[in-house]
Image 1 (cartoon, rainbow over the protein chains, first blue to last red):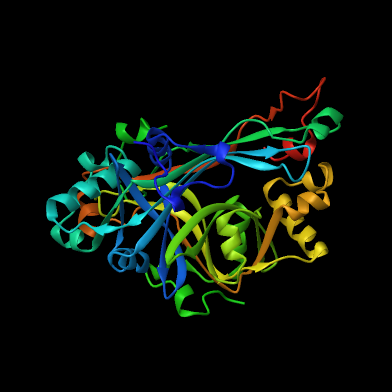
Image 2 (cartoon, rainbow over the protein chains, first blue to last red):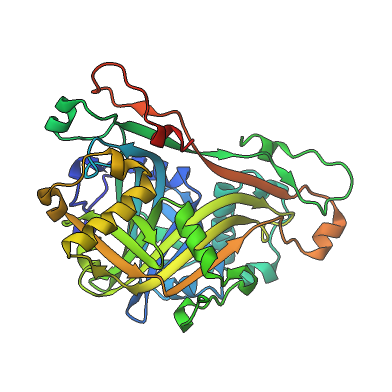
Length: 215
Length: 215
């Protein structure tokens, strides 16, 4: 299935940067860790960073049951989710053509609260395995009380768009021909640091493989 | 001036993570490169990645004059800007206490189009120097035609909140006492890669100091 089936999810600016393959959407969502969830509260937009995970064409979002954005999103109102990965700063010969290399996904839809016990546990597993792969099987699973304190929402990925910019600057011909200024890309990468063990661990501990394997 | 002067910018969840100093807001905004700008379009939220820069307590946003989010924001409607820096994945002993270390700023307000020539040039300079420090003096400055094709908005930073999580997991006492599972933090860092010169440059070029100095 291709993306952009509705007017609001059809990219109007920079069409050459729009990517219509569903695989590209999945790849962007899988590559980032935090999304920005936007809802409308009292006629004003509210955007907050939120943890998520993807299973097929379902995006799971979670947070405290007390979080305003989650509470609002759970009432069946329209939501918008943005996920952006910055890949580089594009230094052009002109200020105007300066840009950034990035991969960005925007999803529109109505979030549905996941309340069925098994479905909620599944959603939490998907989110946990996205943020911390291997933790679901390693860590202590949620108690009923912890489950009750966690809100899980599902959002269908049908209405979404992906925009990707990569490569060198797109300077004007005259600026390129003049050859008077350097131009290029300074790449940005997100890397894992050295794992930091919790000081409250007692005794000697090796960092488990599901954490070390990530680096 | 402290932050959080209004109900919607007062953090209700995780109050211990809320930071009320204005300097902390500035630091978060200065440390990131991309913000998520949310507006309301046809009663639904729309969130899009946007370039920005800060000058004192003014946030400048820019984009194409044709961009829907910028066009909507420029009509004096409420906007919300989110900036999030991920610092690490927090591996707890329990799935429930898994978390992320992050620095996040949320700004509420009404964006004002910057139309005066000098003010717009100033805003563009602030944004350019945020994204690519040194480029304003190095690159070719905007022509009147390029200025006309660029929308610059200003957003007052009065109504904003900052939330920061850092440090080890906050596991339950029983889980810590059991000492049966590793817990800790896997830090996330954003680093610059090796500059990539534009293949369309003619002859030998050294990468200029304002780019190399960034690494």
